[in-house]
Image (tube, rainbow, N blue to C red; front, side):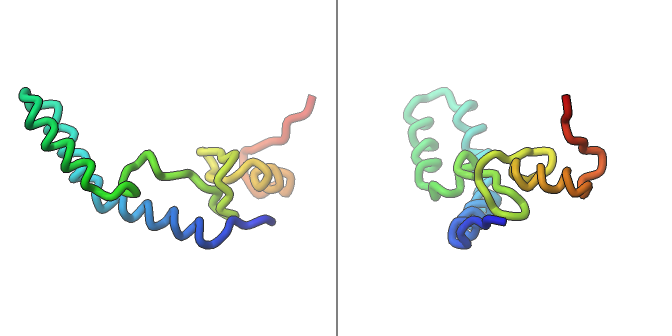
Length: 102
């Protein structure tokens, strides 16, 4: 099994913690922007949003394979990358998943 570099996995965990920490602040600021009619006030609130750490934005999170940490070809239902999913299905480790044959 090929594993992702440990530093990349740790970076992703750090981003998840930051996103959880600033989630409420970010959400309340976005609601506030939609309610405020004046453009100057919107800019001030937008400045607050920009002052938050970049890694606290949810768009920066990347879904990774649960077992290997691989960042590509992930299936949301299983949390696994494609080749690990295929190996587990062939070994009958995932109940209800069947191999395709035609």
